[in-house]
Length: 231
Image (cartoon, rainbow, N blue to C red; front, side, top):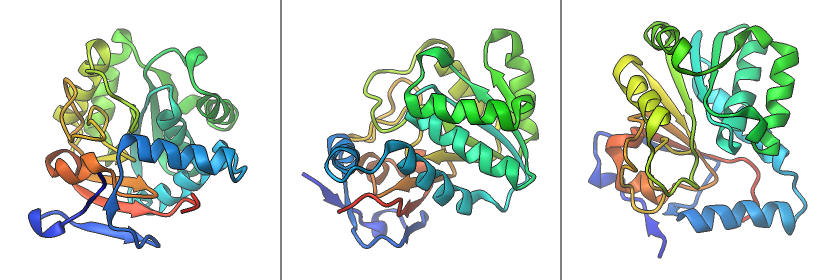
């Protein structure tokens, strides 16, 4: 059952609704169904929702000047690449680190990677053990680290190199802002799936996610933003 977010339980966390007036939190399935209905029932292209999400996220981070953006190869990573594009156009200092095989990415991820490859190829880095030390330096030097590794669909434990990356983000970045949900957080239960990003702020889309309501220690301040998904 959906739950209604009660900010009084977490008095030190700020929760802001941007053009959204639905306090109920949604589960993983409800979030997925809303996306699916937007695409299949109303014919809204998924890439358009990605773009809307990127612009909404951009307005919450444009105060910073130096960014390290950590992207997986799923749709969450596609959001991160779209955000990176807008930040580059605005003249921000951006470094993008991609975890995983881009060839196995989702279509939205590949579309945004293709655009970034033409717009700002010098910002793109495929993250591996060889450039891990360079990555940690970028984390220490950035004003904001954007977490775009895993989205709401994650249900398995984070292991291996992905876990190492998340642990490094938590250790070295002074400010982490997650896209939609902190990577490693179970969208339904709020449990840490092996390891989890500890964000100072999470910008989530369409509705508050149930896991964010249950785990303020991972999500930090939460901003719920409108991206054009029909009710």
